Length: 199
Image 1 (cartoon, one colour):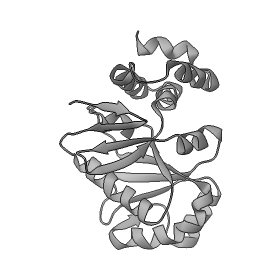
Image 2 (cartoon, helix red, strand yellow; image 1 turned 180 degrees about the vertical axis):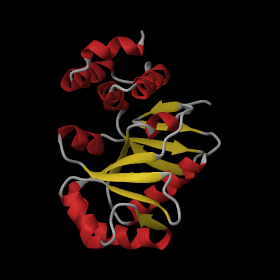
Image 3 (cartoon, rainbow, N blue to C red; image 1 turned 120 degrees about the horizontal axis):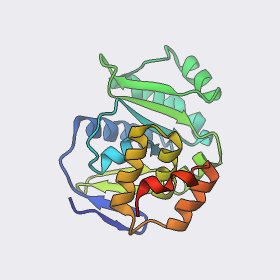
Image 4 (cartoon, rainbow, N blue to C red; image 1 turned 90 degrees about the vertical axis):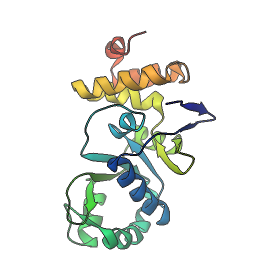
């Protein structure tokens, strides 16, 4: 798989999985509702070919887009359902409490989307500095910048997260800004874990 990373945009082609299609379809709803988003955590590694299972796709969205949640709610109800909410009022209450909402295709529970509002400086940085990923010249999604994504996976610290971090670093170490990566390692208090990335 040839990956081209230029001008904060990553391009490549590959066969799509069920999780990929599910993710792209849901992102299309976010865009239709006019909601600014960024994909974070495990799916970012799977996107580039890491072979492991994930049941949820973590997506942050811009808090200033809360007034657009009603539109998203209506779009979701066409083909999806909320796993942890039974009304628009409940959805809004959860998001206002900085809790996440979980969304899956009707009749299923997995894979599912974990949609949560950006709530801190690093979340907002991810939204503002998102990296675009274009797959098969057709599908476009936004992911957290790798210089933050990799340290965040080290911060989570589970074996699968450290393996995700190493996987992403191995692919993109010649393209990412290593000074930024170290900056976020310091902010997250994981400079002692940089050794897990290798050279």
